[in-house]
Length: 234
Image (tube, rainbow, N blue to C red):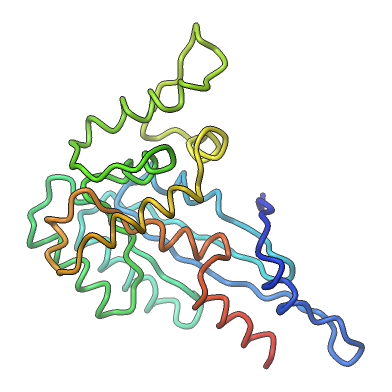
């Protein structure tokens, strides 16, 4: 079921077309998100099926269980097979223990094929952590679990049964919305990204680009909003 979220009033006003000459119409924006993980990332992104006024964001998530380059190749394959269906196509993967060359090549392949790339170094859980705190020192993926648990448990109601993070949980999005701040996570991720100016992405630890995808999914991406505005003006 779609989750209703607010979009900026200024954008809503630009999109609203209620004159007698032109009746309002709905526009669907289709996202294809191809993920390295089969459950963790798809479970998270499935929560972003939103309706903003007359704009509907439809999200299709594909969990592949593949490595970095294969995720990008699969995103390209699905997009090309469904010509003109998807407004935005994204590949989501982590650095993990994959070779540096493979990781860098996957990002470059995505960019050269017009595929959005929501990569994380070292793990997707960095994005979760940024909902609670800014962290600019590298961590092992096993460390993220404890820090996330500690942050949530600061305000967790049931002290006898504390929160325990599990990778494939279906309620992670709701937990982050209740106990963390998506807005702060976007700011923190942007701040991390601004520390780097080279293309040696495998050395950018910690860093995540998930915020760029999330900004589109919540109606906060200026470029996508301009494109939607043009659709209504056609």
